[in-house]
Image 1 (cartoon, rainbow, N blue to C red):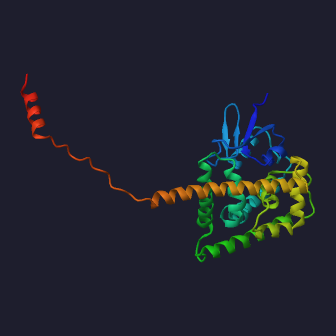
Image 2 (image 1 turned 120 degrees about the horizontal axis):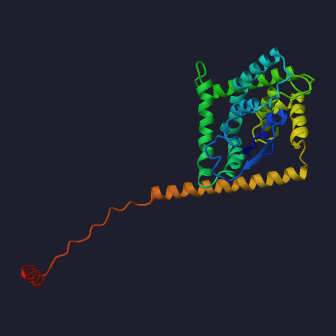
Image 3 (image 1 turned 45 degrees about the vertical axis):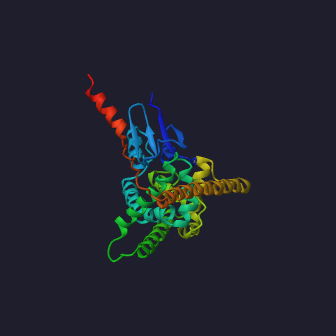
Length: 299
């Protein structure tokens, strides 16, 4: 009997697409306002004997457990899979990180409130900002090389690369249901993991999202997987209005908490700093001094 597999991930209902494709019997546990996801190592796969984090390591672990979505691929298709995954991480990932974590309107309106709602106080006031700075540092470390010295130049380049990557994916997919025919594989899981959040989340700044929505076969690819494997293919207008209203309330709440902390910090800094008070030295009267001397001399 196979060991039970439990996947801990952020809320959203999509879990791990590869597990769906390979038939792995996962129990999905949503991380919601707990300390477990505070270090940012989500998703986490837990078995009787192992704890595995990070998507690539989880995929390798599932393959070793005989849950493999690539059994029917040829050697050439396997090589193409590795090449396209490298392309996604080099060309598309920086723009996705920028869209969610660096673009200020998207970060303060969508990303920060969403993550802050799932991280306990007071870490929900600290960790989103840390994750945002980490995303920016990763972008600059990998793409901020000569001749791209300024942040604006780096941003322009990563979005050009991302659009080029999306065009290549669209051409490769064509009219097929999946990238290698009628059966989903590792490449489909990777592409879905990058595209589905970008496709479904409502951002104020939609530079990359607008380009994705012009590539109808990639949008159809995401919708088919959502409806077939996650049953989230469509959201009613009323349901979406509720989601938007809750997100707006959450944004206001997080902003109020942040403003309160900043005001408290400013008040502490601006409050007058009084020097420590010194206690006056006690002086004995002559009579008291004489009495005290007699007490010291008495046996």
